[in-house]
Amino acid sequence: MRELVLHCLEAQAETLSDALLEAGVLSVSVEDADFGTEAERPLFGEPGTEPEVQAWDRNRVVALLPDGADPAQIYEQATSQAGIDPIALGGWSLRDVPDADWVRLTQSQFGPIHIGQRIWIVPSWHRDDPDVSAAETLAEDAVHIELDPGLAFGTGSHPTTHLCLAWLEAELPKGSTVLDYGCGSGILAIAAQKLGAGSTDAVDIDPQAVQATMDNAQVNRVSVQALLPDALADGTYQVVVANILSNPLKVLAPMLAGRVAPGGDLVLSGVLERQAEEVALAYAPWLKMSVWQARDGWVCLHGRKT
Image 1 (cartoon, rainbow, N blue to C red):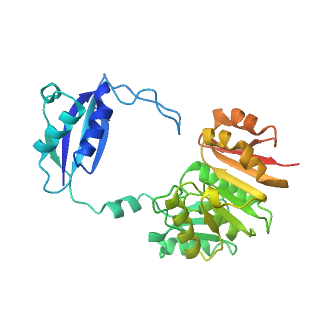
Image 2: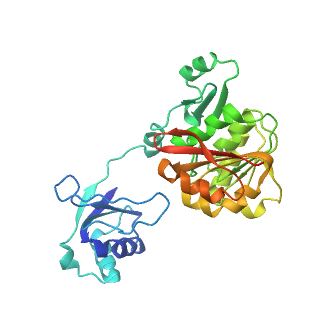
Image 3: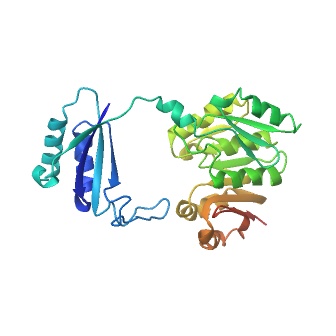
C-alpha cells in the first residue's frame, strides 16, 4: 500500500482532510510538520472535549491510498473540492507502507494483566499462555477474565479500569445487583459477576460495545444483560459503576445517582485528580462522593446513598 503525503497550513487541515476522504482515500492523519524541531508546538486538550486549535501551524497530511488509486487524480480532486490552490501546497509525494500483520501487531501490545490479589485479565489471544495458568494456580480464588475488546474501550490496561476492578474486588457485596454504565468491552460487568454479583446490567450508547459485552460475557460464561440506554428498564441497583470521563459523568449525575438504591454504592472513574472535586460537587445533592483510590493521575470516586 502507499500513502499520499502533502503539507498545509492550520486553517486548511480539516477541510483538506475531509476532501481527501471524499476523493476516496482509506484514512487521513494530520501530523505536526515541525515535530522534533525547535518550531514544534505541542497541542493539549481536555479528554472528551473539542480542542480550541484543530491543527498545528504547519501540518503534514498523510492519506492512505487504496490499491490502484491514481495519487495525482486524488490530489487534484481533493484540492479542487477544498478550494485550495494546489500550487500553493507545494505538490505531493508518495511513500510505501510496509506489509505487516496489523492485527497481530496490535494484539502484541496487550498481554495478560494481573490486578489486585485475584483478578487476571487475559486477552483472548493469550488464553493458552502457560505463565498465566501457572500464576493463577497460586491463588485458589483467582478470577480469570478472558477478553476480546473488539471495537470497544476496555482492555484492562487503563488506570481507570484498574481502579474500578480494584474496588469491585475489595468492596463488592456478594449478591449485589450491579449496573455498569458505559460498559465498553463489558470488563467491569463480567468481573462483578465473577466476584459474586447478582443480576448485572451493562449499558453503552455504542451498539458495538453492547455486542462486545455480550460476546465477552458468553465466552466467560456469566450472565450479563447488555443493552442500549433506551432499553434499560426503570429501577435501582445496589452497585452502580461508571468508568467514562468527567464531563459526561457530571451531565449524567441525576440519572446515575437515581439508579443507586438506598444503602447502595456509586463508583465513578475516568476522572483526573484535579477534576475530582468538581465531579463530587455534581453528585452532592444525592450522595457524598470522595476519592477511594488514585492511580497515575486518575481517581476512583465512591459514595454510598444513605
